[in-house]
Image 1 (cartoon, rainbow, N blue to C red):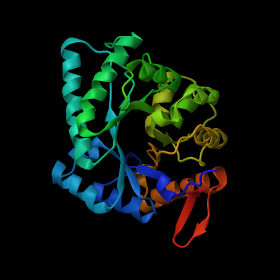
Image 2 (cartoon, rainbow, N blue to C red; image 1 turned 45 degrees about the vertical axis):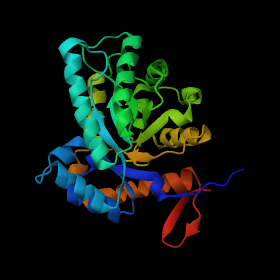
Image 3 (cartoon, rainbow, N blue to C red; image 1 turned 90 degrees about the horizontal axis):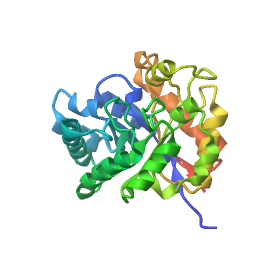
Length: 297
């Protein structure tokens, strides 16, 4: 068997999990021992010094950029709505390129104005992927658990396959899988090389009883892996992804109103505990080395 190496670098944080200015977020993530960060557009365009200053801060931080989020409601629109979304996509791709982000995250459409024709969705996503090619960016398509047509990774995978673009793949989000109770057995049908991003989170109740509760939980009360009541399923997800050959990044995407009221270092340390739990106890790849934690054999 080929020996593989890797460290806590396998895991990163989304800035969406932290309150405060971009500089403080980057510092807290770095001081918690992470080497990568998933950025959201608001962090960049909302910086008081402007986009160029925000890009400079990210590059000076020394953190590797996992990806850039999020393009919403892109696929399935027609006419002026489609043209409008293409303009938005181009602008987001340019920002991702400036940041050195290798992946743009696109979420499945929730718009009632969008077509439910799978082939139409695939055609639009192929166009998005082609726009990203000159910039060297991959597009990770994620099925939102309240998406109009695509609400599970299984359907997202069907759309990706129909689009048939080499730089278009899947974004996997544990929250949405848990919320829809999608069977993890379906992961065996995926091509691990076409999974471009995995985002991890949990939540505190056993089941979600309505779409409204699903949206509210997703946006306000996720918790880090190992903190919620679905730890076994999150661990199973990570192990199954590993078993099919996924060797990409994991990022903690935790929307939590309570965490927005805590000091950034406290929240970042919670994320670090999740990374060590997944690396040491779930994947069981740790090999003690001075100053760093090895997560892959």
